[in-house]
Image 1 (cartoon, one colour):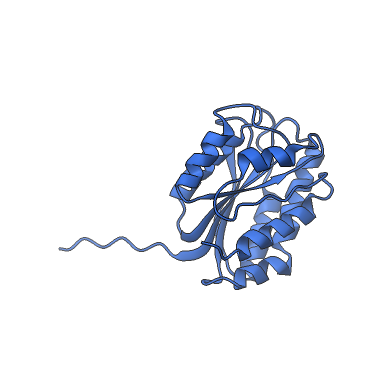
Image 2: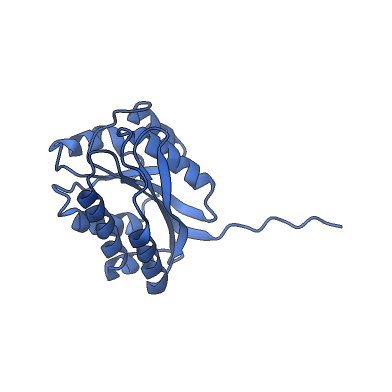
Length: 213
């Protein structure tokens, strides 16, 4: 009796890991502004149009909260996004996800390392793999962020950033020098939490529609 062949993973244009800062500097109101920004972005027609511009006309995304080197919690599991219904469901899942971490330092390196493990468990194959880090502070726990970033880039992963400058006005320079990496990597800073939703939307549209190799 022949053993069954393993089923091939469905291919999608992009595997996107969304890493959301929930460290001690992120108050309840700031966390809610982040969450509402992602919810609004995934419900915006611009994101669906970007998805439809791809080869498979689909992406897969997951979201987690992060603080310290070993403090990460999945908020939304891997989800295939291909139409208005799946995008609305993903936005609803983000909206309903409670905050589960509140302190532990700011370990961007830990967030990148956790993202790499999420790629390994993804039920889809992505033509691109992107880690999307949002945060309001520099790496102050765990290994150096450049080591984590460089390890990810060597494995073909792009690291993008959304630094929030409300507490550290020059955080965008830190993200540019230390956090983002890989072909076509970029960051879009948000000067305050209040303008975070617009920055999220611009960033998602760019990274989904990017056709680089």
